[in-house]
Each structure stands twice: as C-alpha cells, then as structure tokens.
Length: 355
Image 1 (cartoon, rainbow, N blue to C red):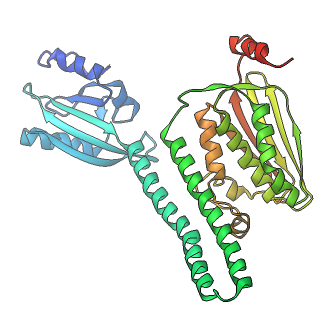
Image 2 (cartoon, rainbow, N blue to C red):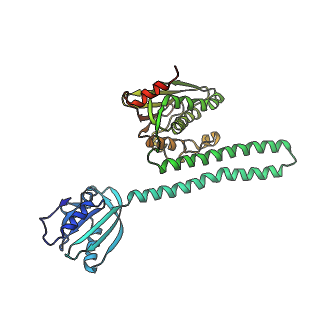
Image 3 (cartoon, rainbow, N blue to C red):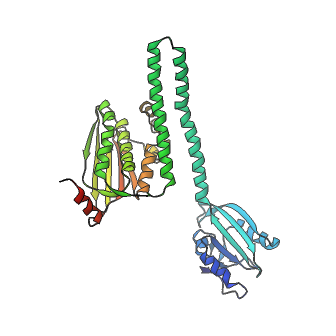
C-alpha cells in the first residue's frame, strides 16, 4: 500500500484496510484531487505516479463523482506506463465517501477484451475454413447425381468426395483439440511420459506419408521423461514431422532427435526443405496461418498444426522455438521440464520396465 500524503485524520482507516485486501487497483483522493492512498496495483499499472493520478480521463471521472455525489462508472482505453506506448482497457468507478474523499476502483480488462477478440476471430476463421470442404462436398454430390449413368465419373467424383470428407474430419478434430487446449491452462492428470516413446509413435504415424515421397525419417532418441499427456505430446511431435515431410522435396531427409540437456528435455525436428522467411516466422504459430496455401490444399493441411504444438507445449510448462533460413530448411525445438534423476517416479518406471 502506497501512502502518498501524511496520514489524513478524516479518512476512515477501514478504507485503507479494504484497499489492501482488494485485488483491484484502488486510489483515495482528497478534496483537492490529490492522491492520499494508492494500492500497489494502481502504481504498478501506472494509474498513480509521483503522488498524482496520471490519466486525465480518471481525474474527470473523480470530479464528476464529487460534483454528483453518486457512483460513476466508465470503461476507458488508457495508455499504459510512463512511455505511453501500450494501451489498457480499464473499467473504473468512482464514489464520493462521507468524509469528502473520493474512492476510485479500477479493473484491468485488457486480457478479457483480447480473449473476446480472439474468440470472435476464431469463430470467423472456423466458419470460413469450413466453407471450403463443405462447399466442395456439395458440388461433388451434384456432380455424382448428374453423372449417375457414367460409372467411371461416379467413381472419380466419389474419390474426390472422400478426400474432402477426410479433410473436413481432420479440420473438425483439430478445431476441437485446439479449443480444449486453449480452455485448459494446465493438464488435469499428468503422468510420466518418456518423450522417446512419444517420438517413436509420432514417427510411425508419419511413415506412410514419408514413404509416399521417398522421404527418410532419421529418429535418434535418448531417455527423457516428463510429466504430461502421451497422446498430446505424440500429436505435437507428429504435427512437426508432418510439416517437415510436406514442406520438403521428395527423397529428402528429416531428423527427429530426443535429448536431455540438464533440467530440460528437447524434441528437435529438422528438415532441409523450403525454409521459412523471417516475416513468416513470426506468424507460423498463428491459427489458420499457411506458409504456402496451395501446398496446404494439396496436402490437406488445416493451418492449425503449429498452433496446436504451441498450446501443447504451454500446457506442459514448456515452449517451442523455430530456426529457419529460406532454402536451407527449418528446425523446430520443443523444450519441456524433465523429471529429476532422483524423482521416485523414475525408480518405479525402472522396476516396471521389462528385463
């Protein structure tokens, strides 16, 4: 709690106690609009500096409350910090106390506003992405009906319908997976997972795609046990390997490495494919971002794979990094906290391991 002026005998001590207990930003101002008491949060968020209320909009709100004598409530878009470069959305209310002081309370609603904005964008993007396969299926169904007397045409159109149906099913599943990951900040029931097992399973699932392009997947593993969800970690690694194969030329080589470096376990997926431009690198983890839309359509890519990788890593207390140079390939590195050597879980795993 920050006391900006000498103790004011007319101020009820209970007000100070309440401010100390609240998570909101709180400021008490005297009859001259000078700050008497300010909460730590109010100072950290830049509402109060050098014993004064910084923003003119808040000073106006305080004066309106003083003149009207009733509660005043506003939502304001204010500059953040002394450099005034960032913005924050603040829900503020001012109330005149019987002592003549004005109590100003404020909530930072920036994160809530951004979440709402992201949700709206997500719904709009999903609607747009679903239109393509649904529209394709509708047109193909009409084509099948028109070609009912031509068995070869029916077979051809039915095959294309299967491709679009598979694409739609994959898109819906990835939307569901991503939505679940975004709702949960952490895992509900983490279990010990050896990333080497997750990597082997992920590579096995990519073998058919790799074989179709004569691509070699070189898997190198060592034991690296983390707390997490085996299915999610396998999906994250598989998405990286899928991308490496899809964005490499035929007969290319993809290297998947699982290693432990101190207290960190890493899964590294490297390719010598097209590479990613510096501009695109800052966007590859965005939902529905496609590096090459034409190639994504050809491979059935949804633009959600890397976003899922990012959220899986975050939910496991880790992160994912990218290195890439156009024409020289790309390397994605998943980093997760590893179990300590003296963790009793490792001893139990060793006992259960087949001999």
